[in-house]
Length: 551
Image: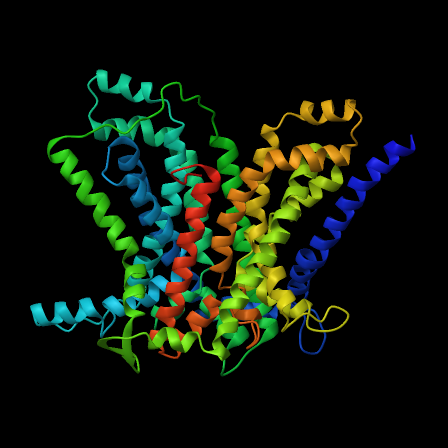
């Protein structure tokens, strides 16, 4: 009886500790933002800050701008991702393994790096702009504004749709497609009437993820928006602006963002639950060798899209080796940019990125495994509450989380602002939901009878978890951890709010160098980040034993 209580207590204590952590680092900061949004300077409670937002066009028009950019970018990403996934799954494209890697790399780099690279290419003084102006004797104004923001977001987000749809097509039973072909349906008819309806749940789910990601991003519109101001830019300027700031008004803006993203999240859950189906791929879709004009067009389209998507990374790597004078390049080869960023005063930016990332990933893996085990194997009201709370960081934009952390941990007893700890915790909280989801899926595939057999042979429940369940999970967990690591080192939205001169990371350094027009240094930092992502991706393929990434 005592042994039973002891076993029960271990999992109960773990559940309570994890719940306490989420209450302190998720519920408390968000609750404080809600409170600050209705707290006036004189201590009274009022909704005046919300009235201020919706009564002035200057403010609410940023929300309309955000929706316009996000809707168009999501539609373009969905169409492009669907076409790319179908072509690479149905037609044998030469070098498709490497094309897949390039598509994933184009997604893993932060959107603002793409924005900065496109400024180098299509800005007022960009390489392509100068060529077009010279050839056609015109004066193009560059990539700035609505069209530029949509271009950057679409090219950076379509790989997410591609990965989801590619995974759905892999599980599709191709016999339905073949039956339609034997009945005389053309390729376009088969795609539109058979394949698209079957993968609609996946397409909608991935599109909503793109929507949430694009809606909360501030780096891209900040760099190339110019007069086209979006809601995240307004939020950032209200909290971090150089001219004037209003913490309570910024809190009200955070609440508006949280409400919008919550609605989107529940919409995604609703659509997913209503449209989800299961299909056994008795005859999975296999890539067939195409001939004639169809083969040529498929290759040209895929290569062209991948080239345009990866162009920002190629531009950044190339320009990192060019000499700069002010904001322009001389065209001379140099290593000075790398010498600048590897100086003793700058080297801590690299060490911070890797050390903070590794510390956050360690926490993510440990907590992710424990939380997924508790929610799958130890179902109770307590573990259900933990499961719900772990999804909040997934919903909340990084900038909101960063602002809430500064509000919550800016005084004793939890004075964390300005420290490495607050950056590590924010990175951990932001990326944990992904690892929890993948770990939960892995535990679901491990039969409880394995643990029961170990217990029946005299092992304790804790020992069977550590020695049997965890090793069986590890390959999948490590694969998920590597992907989390890649997205974690690319995190900007929360880090830009929480950093100090001592806790600067690569993404913050890139952003600040771009703002200062030190494009050579920014390119060198970006190249290091890109190479780190590529090497991590290679490690993912090695650990997972997979040759492609599909969700």
